[in-house]
Image 1 (cartoon, rainbow, N blue to C red):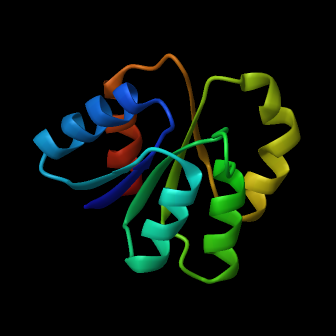
Image 2 (cartoon, rainbow, N blue to C red):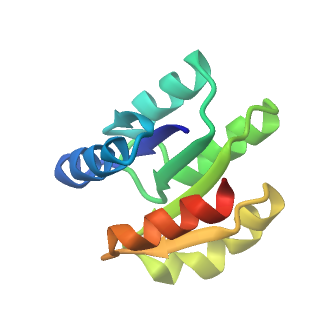
Length: 118
């Protein structure tokens, strides 16, 4: 699968990208929302693993833009701020996002979510 990993924590993004690449996926890491948005405009991805909160553009805003442009890949939202989920859950549901994983997480959780989306 072609996977975009959008996470502003550079270490987590790199380790997760390496993990997914080791499992045979083609992975592009993006370390902020602007870069993730640019990459998603340049090419199509099968899956986007995206942080809910990034300093410049929130993950939910990127996903809503992709949905509006009818370029929405399957999505796994990761978040370290679970108290925001009540607020954004209706927005996620409206664009078809069903998978939300809370930080800290095990890479096995990402692997399982990808297997369900495949």
